Image 1: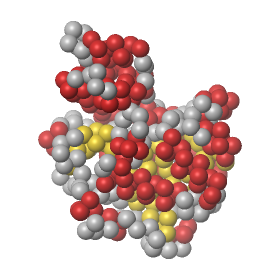
Image 2 (image 1 turned 90 degrees about the vertical axis):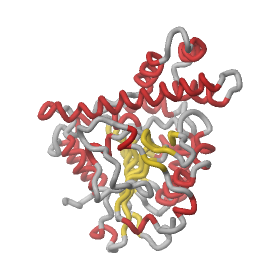
Image 3 (image 1 turned 180 degrees about the horizontal axis):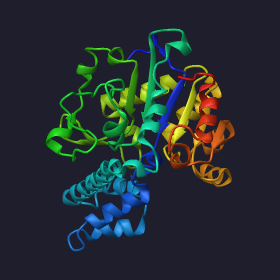
Length: 337
């Protein structure tokens, strides 16, 4: 994946679980609840005990998968429970469209905002500009509502995958197998489009060639990423994109719990003049306190350019709110399209 001859759009988007939460998705608490309630009270006592003592489901997942004290049946049961939670999350997302005009957050307004991160020749002066929408989410919100042919998922886009607005998730039609390294080397994936949706931690519908689900969950995520050629390439792309000079990164819904992601952001701030813009409904003083407990959080807080303490509902009931107009002007400048 060669970015040497590409002009990176200076506007880059990164989202986390808080983004999907605006459309009915779960935060960590909702995932814990769904996983815990899926596990049988009689057959999965050890797993339920772990969850009762640790409300970070990713921490529990890591302990169960990595420790010998849990047998293969228990590991499989937890994997099934996690996927069930994602399926429940997807059902919630799928139902959001049915709210129609009662949608708290306008899908159309958010889609218009997301499309602004396209490769924009008028900004860079070059037709080869590449735009990037990175996410840590593993749900199918974007595929259902905000995606399209103008924003394919880099390397894993397959026209046979049936993930669309109101269609219920089915493994047989919605899942796909990730390409191997030899397949990635055959073509330059960046040549297929000028705007890409890049799922840094995998997706609920992705599988490796050996049938393993490709969800980066738990601790030591960078090890999991390096074990798969697609995810490894994705993370390298994330680092290369953010290390371009004077990038403006807009973050929605990320809690800064991942050290490998935070390091890329922190390093790019220090070395490449990365400008960080945050949309987060938490009051800034509370966000600062929480961020200071996260890896490299103090450096990231010191480098934030703009902080907007709003939810998507406050900014995007439509695309005409004063909050959105101010954000658009601050971030995109005089570009009015």
